[in-house]
Length: 185
Image 1 (tube, helix red, strand yellow):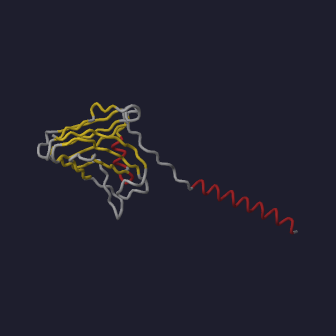
Image 2 (spheres, one colour):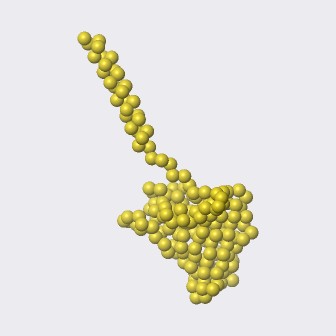
Image 3 (cartoon, one colour):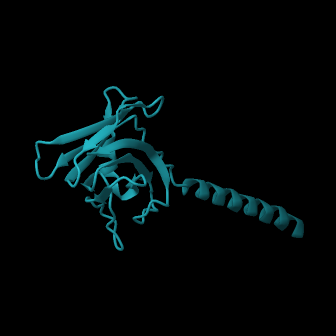
């Protein structure tokens, strides 16, 4: 009788173990891939003279980037409102990735970093809906203030931060990492 219980208990143990593995597999969260972004456009509007609009675009970010239209010529001591637009041109028709970023705002953060010597400050003006201690900035909308004449680069990084967004650039991975040339005159 002792011999019949051991195989039964062994089979029960294997069944339990197999069931636990299946449950673990079912609980694995799906991966959330980074957005495909091929084109980024930064549009700045002079707050004092709204008809003065400056635009810079970088194309082909997924291959050989085209920086020929990536320079922003800005006025010294001026405040601009900024908007960033993202496209995925690998799709037909091109996909507006900006809408996807806006839809998943709680998972994304744009980080703007002016190079040393560039007289430019950037303030992110839009917010996500993360609960306290949020909401956190997104960066699709900005306010940029220029100082004295200078030139340099504005690094633009889009951080993908699902379940880790805390208002800083540290967590997550980068969906976008590029530079715009800035000339303040």
